[in-house]
Length: 340
Image (tube, rainbow, N blue to C red; front, side, top):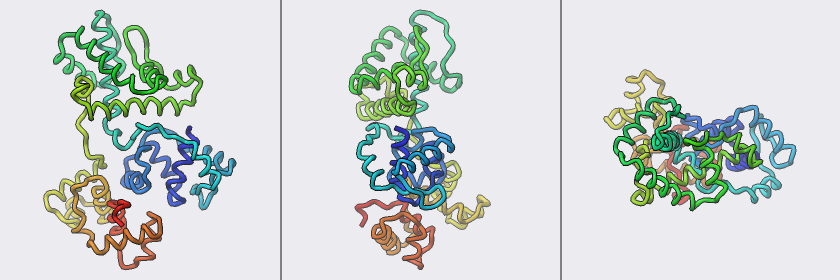
């Protein structure tokens, strides 16, 4: 599974990004470059889905190269071979996993939900317990939530019905993996490693199966909130996924400040503010780019990127010497295939 995920990333990056970019993508590093790459190369579903250290990633790359599935074009930069393409035909990424869409809420939802399950299964039998999550914010949320749902027997029954309704829609093995992670009055939740050992599967496959169910739950309760009101009430309101510094720049832009003014106010380099603007353009649909990029230039950049079939800035710059790298990045931030 992990080999195929890395192979998939190498295929999507087309020899334009290094192993470091895959590292940042799979670990969910929230830098402007990684956030942009997620969209530009259509790999956002993988964002933050497979925590992995660089040494293991490099080892996998060497294995893929030994298999004849990739070849090195520069230091730690690879392209996929025809046999690698053939191998990818058999790779199926879990259908509901979407690291980009759920990166801001999946962990929080799981902590709230798993502590809730532990709490109600102990409270109903008046059994003392040590909370599975020490975070006081999580504990406070669950306490407030339970205070609003005082009829414990009815609450437990309704929670069971909602979860049964959701888990009956996924594969039995994945439903079991999700349930095995839960701590109740009668048992301590298993780790991914314990589950992997028990069912004799790769730890990454178990982790992705768990995320597949978790993301399925989040997606379903969003669409069917009337059917799953209790679980929906555990969700956190979505936030625009910008880096902290980019959010500050976005706040100033909304107040009418220009690029140069923001750079002076924040005592940052102009290039840093440009990075923020590209990040904002990538992930804030309402953001208008025309103050920074003429429409004629935007169309020329997109047309060139489409003809070259690349997101590599240098290649586009060489073809269009009159546009800046900032303008190229800004155009690519909004590039959709139907735009051409």
